Length: 312
Length: 293
Image (cartoon, rainbow over all chains, first blue to last red; front, side, top):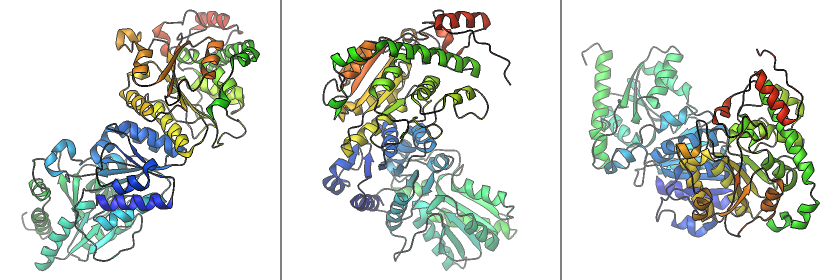
């Protein structure tokens, strides 16, 4: 996902001389080709995220299109007031790219995990949020971000993300993507947890439970119609996110369902009032934090038993 | 090129310093009137930068009120956004905005907030207010000029208390590393902050030396001395390859004697008796402040 993003920025820089790549001392090696081809348009701020964002806003005020890239938590939390005041309040055309969101930096511990960014970014007026699920989509949202005149946050995993799409799929800003059809229950998810969810959905399918799987590569603006349609069709929604259940995807889904008076039952899978726990591989981290395909399957089964009147 | 902006000493002699002094006095009176009639504002923080703004806008900045978005204009950013009224009055003096708008200050629905908004007023380059933002923002503007090889210059006024923000020092490192000699920062070094003297709260001394050590070319001036300010701004860049820092020694509340150097006035308005004294100090007719909505 990281390489796909950087290759996309490289291609964008070749087409538009206003594109700049900003980093806060990260992207060793992976930015080599970009740095070689566009040395003047690669700006390393050192370990100073807040400064990177204020300067990015000033650059944007002069027509530049800065893509500011660093570890998701440092970007969205260390520089939050800069994102709010300098970028969003002033409506500056700055792209924010958070790498290693969720617990993609698995064994680096909770200081390097980011399970708050969707909640923090979505309450900022005018912010568009993308959370791609695989390298192809990461490339597409990067191009889409360049088309938008205004602040955009892109939530990325790290390297080595598996492919979700077998073929080139068209990408449309603000549209949810159905990755599996079904009428028994809907799973609503976003970003790089998708492969894990998809594996659960396929296993359930083999067991005779057909899940409607909706992935939101655009978290904001949120495709309400797709959600409400899924709610009508299945009456049961499970949200799955590598994020706190507060304020992120589960929060958005609950708000939309309540606002529209949907009778659908919604359960949220994610982190409940705690920081990501443990040090281990990414696969181990998902298991240890309740987001493995096994645990997703178990949540689906108990939710369906609930509806069928059996004790969960 | 920066050289073409330079003011030679002989030219300073030709500049009508008395006219600039008179303009400063007029600006101070208008600030006082605007804030008192508006019912609130940071009077002393405005008064300490009056001469700095007067010299910049009247003699140094290449800006055109008829073409406020010209991409080649010099930029001025008020990082200490709480001195907004000083900026508003200067924009009115220069013709960026209609002076009549000043009468709306403090009234509900006005476009003149307690801190400036770049989307509401021509001539305002940044929405500041939260301290430690305008300074690094101005570096983005200066860096864009370098990348585009444009000759416009960027000026930014920051407060001395503002320098307690860590973001100021991240930006200080960055500007020096990038050699932004097209950027000039002016510190309004009035030595007071909201509650007390800086030295009693968190000292920034030795101020000028700090900036030198951070890689800036520094000049210290009396921030109310118009010829000294003209001389300093006339020598830009102080050293090629280094960002410029003018440490302007100022007096918070300058112009109203009972307000000068007294912290309590940071956000306070004079009572009717004090108003009389203040108007006398400023050389203006007494103000009658009516009941507000």
